[in-house]
Image 1 (cartoon, rainbow, N blue to C red):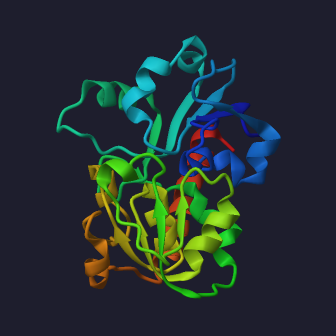
Image 2 (cartoon, rainbow, N blue to C red; image 1 turned 180 degrees about the vertical axis):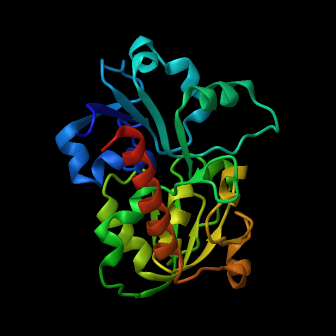
Length: 253
């Protein structure tokens, strides 16, 4: 019998990638035996807590309360484990607090690979209709500082759009996706698109299959660098299934 459990991540947010990255939303059995709360809310008394996904580990240790520490299982699923510096005390504390860590960062051999769980969404199985050469998918508040070029005629969507289905249709409509959103790049790669990533931190350098990389202010001249693969979806779904089994084994479910 699955333990009583709660899922915590940045649920109440305008950032779509953060809002939809909890395994609670993709496995029906979790809806029967668990519930989801925002990371900012106190953890109720439960046997198991699953944190993530997203880039939450840096601040997670200070959010752990008495019920977190009392839980029989503390699991991080699909979290970013890359750090800004080689040694980080706050990351170390968060990792030490977990019984199981699934990292979304390919190549971090300290942990199990657990890509963002959105890869299991059936939205990625819908037929793809390409009617644009290029679309932009932009981080709604990082783009101005990066001075991302927005050429006339190129469709643009930002990551504060609350609909995952609309976002996937936007990404699917292009032959090449240009994005400075972690999840925008990830979802476009899952769709098998050629992707040009406009990075603003090291979190953009650990996808299971790497995109191409360009400069925010000059990306139209760099579209030839865009990269992608039809293998991304299958690889991420397979890894997610393996980690899901590890979670079940740990909790006896």
